[in-house]
Amino acid sequence: MTRLVYHPAGHDDELRVALVELRAGHWRAARDLLRVTGEGWALRTSRTQVLAVAAAGSDVVGVWLGEEPGCYDAWLMCARVAVERALRARRRGHPQALTLEVRARTAVWEAVRRGPSDPVGWVCLLALAQLDAGQVREEHRVVSGEGFPSGPWGLLGEVERCDPFNREAYHRVVQFLLARDCPVWSSLAAVHDFGRYVTTQRPAASPLLLLPAHAYVERKRRGVTNRAWRFYWEDRSMLSCTLDAFHRWFRQVPPVERSVADLSLLAYALWAGGRLVEAAEVFGALEPYAAREPWASVYTGSSQADPGEALLLRARTESFSSRPSGAGVRP
Image (cartoon, rainbow, N blue to C red; front, side):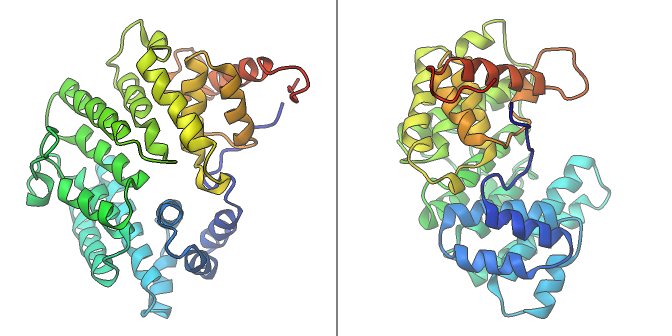
């Protein structure tokens, strides 16, 4: 069986090269990558996010900006990196968390000023919204016209203006809804309703069709589930969303635009829903790559070495075994 490879770039070979260079302290490959990505907003959003995670531990992006102060992408990546550092600092309870958040907001607004039509800057502001759990900032308590709790709906509207149904933007809203100062059940209910609402908008060829699945995994992660957990994936409503994502997203977009994280979630949802043939197709498209989620969050076994991988390997084996003979079933 193919050895699993955990790598954020997945099948995006150009991104993988840029990541190697960035981690080595070289920024030119990242600059060239973003230049050729241009206004392919979905790919631009995902690539800048992955690059920022890799660059957050060094000053490589700051060096880039110092050498090319007129380069918009350098300003944007500085904002991306600043946001990643602020989020990490809050998660770790770092004493400089507030300072890093202020720096991030300043960097993001500068990027937005320089490129207001680029959705990535607005996505960065949505990412920072989760740090305002008490909704102190006015832009984080806008009244929703769809019955959702007050939140950063104006910022989401700005992203929509630039790039309708931007994947990261909607996931950042989910993170905000979960971070609010309110009971866990209330947060999860809001996320559930939001996920269902998004799918009713029928976003064409979009991984957002998986948002209800993402919301349900979050319930498991936070311990708000019952013994019917596995059977829920076979429920007509959830299975309809899962198959919608399979047919209207997975089969319609180029491999480079399908993230490992989304493919992993789709594979799990199909397998858990009993659609093993479709799950096998997704697992085949993933190879040799894999993600630790949602497997680690839904795993209920006792292995401490690599929680979730045993479940992942089991699901792959069962799915591949379901394929018709002659379809390249793996041993």
